[in-house]
Length: 411
Image 1 (cartoon, rainbow, N blue to C red):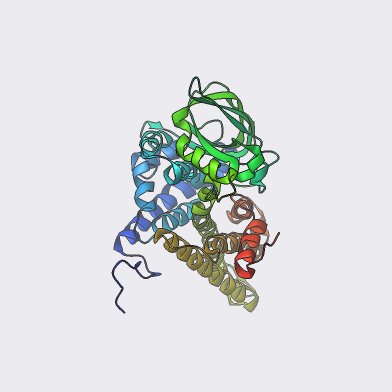
Image 2: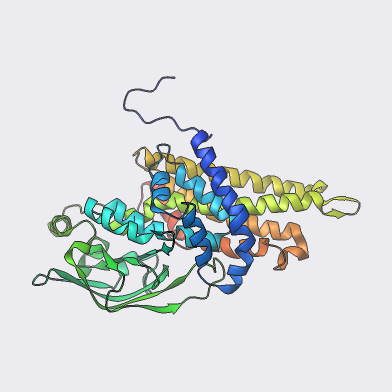
């Protein structure tokens, strides 16, 4: 069937040669560098700077690489790269990709000047690796983004914004070179009165609060970010003041304010997060499969037992289904198609729940071995849980999907 001029290219579940080459390259790094170091950095609960440096040297941790995958015409570049990295290890991989959420926040909503100035500062280069952090959640505002209390006040005389508040659960929080902070400029307007601000390195009043000790993804730094009267230049308002003033004026007049920047960032990232979960789930399925073909009990491989064989069948089918949902959402987003049926939320919901379930099943297949730290499946299970929580819990995804399905204001 021919495609009409200007119509989006048809979805194809088979990556082209360039994507396959990229996938194999990233998989090689994940297998040779990330996975052998995973247990050590999980125990250390520290950012794996040496691995970030290795990735930077080969161009994997770089603005150029992530930009190329983000702009890849099929939309599958980021999902494929993320799946391979998280197949290696979720904690280390999150350290490698944690800057991309801040980068997306600026790239999706910022001015060309902001993109050109600040995105390079989130990655750096070999010998000077840098990080970005996106700061939206707060101690009292996780899923309820409208309850954000961090305030931003504009001082016209000096053309500065003053930020005050505390952010929680920030990946790279406090150690990043660039923080992108969501703050309220008009609390009476809820989410419609919020904006995002770029906070450069060394800004007075910005500090790291508590570092969280987590169940999983422990090689990724997660901490509070405290903003005590932080002053940033007017040019650090993402998108610029003219655009913000126009949006606020429309809202105050009863009009539609358009999509809020933080919501756009989360929506754009959902297929990416789904791909992370697919990578962890796939690792568990492959490991459990190999174990089941080699582990002999009662005179035959345990994979010959229907209980094990059927479990592996369900695990493999679930992972493939999650990947296809993820690729569909990523492809639609890249083609500029509206995700009217909550395709992005579907991908994240199914992939995250699948990761938790199949890693649990992998432990069951390994039995007592699976419960020990001598085997990686227990770590993968701990890692998998975060995908049902961050960047929109499973319950939030179900709410979004149910609204799309019913057309009702499901709460």
